[in-house]
Image (cartoon, rainbow, N blue to C red; front, side, top):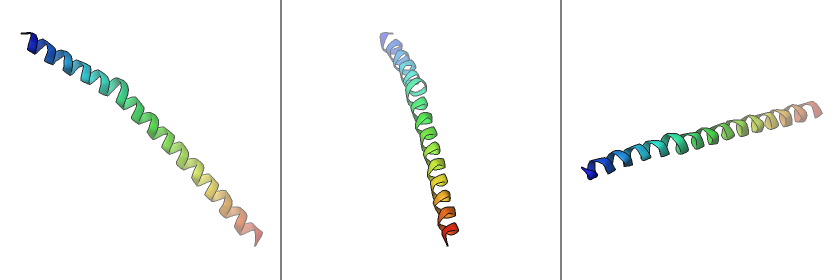
Length: 55
């Protein structure tokens, strides 16, 4: 009986870790990467526009 209870407790703890810690960290990292990509795109576009206007 205690083995079943420990298995259920372990499964609940695993779900808590996945949904409480891992997924928010992944979404935070994804948001960071998207913001970084937008900033990099803006820098590349700005450099391209400035270099074409100098000619």
